[in-house]
Length: 411
Image 1: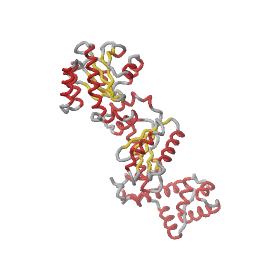
Image 2: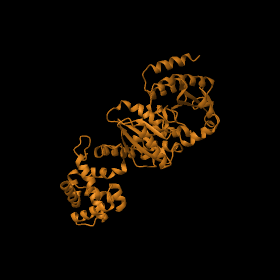
Image 3: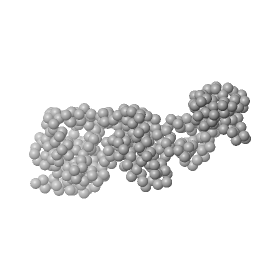
Image 4: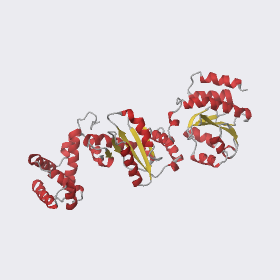
């Protein structure tokens, strides 16, 4: 039975066709009805293109290359969905979404691992039992092709990794399609996200192992190798939970000399690419400026990042005279007035807190502040002056690393 179809399928598979061309040939030579192949997230892998007809699922998939959130929800609420998700045999579906246009649904699986689904629409001729048998045969033929990862690598990633990878490649041409996919599965995500860019400079052979271990922390922690680094996305509703995830990642990586850039928290998943670059930039700048640290939150490096886009030849002109005076005094007299001034600023001009941060007595701090005023001829509690000195220090730090081979501030 089906000897003719088996021979035809063998000839097609051995002809080294692209997957799309293979599906076109299967439609013409096996079914003579429109067909669609999706992955397990109902993203279209391939569909026949020589027929147009009025069906909500078909029309949406043709436009957006995936099934709509509404059709997926509607199908999942139908008891027939259990047959697709649980059994290996194809069946005729003619209720709910298939009420007006019946269709055959089949599961493409190998060794109990599901790689996708087939949908055959009743358009050119009535679907019969022989078509169900043909569907089973085609699913059997397609399963090793999908399992071999030769068709579409994204179908082998976890659902979240699949979305995140797509988002990292978002552009004007695919933005509508990707945003639509996000909308479909938005209920799977919690409210907030944060991106971590992790690199182990000495040995990258452990990346796959480390990424897999990070993934074990929680369902809302997604880690994968991307652009020569370990990219990790945290999804959470509570900042405390997020901080716990970061501590667990630190503890997990404690035996490795890793460097971790951390983006700001965000809620719009379509902006993932922007925040990935934040994490990447924080790590790149952090490694240069504070090389002995491990964690580099972007909020601590965003000023460096902004200045880095300003012509480097102009950097010296941005450093205030008060900074130069204190730095020169410290160099000549081996004092720490500059750091005292900055700590005083960062603690909100609170004497006791600043003294505690510096590890000195309150009276010692007051004496230093008096000395600072004599040197710069300004009030040491003048916020504008303190702010200028603080940001001058940041610019000076950036100037010290501008010649680094891995950092080009004028690029």
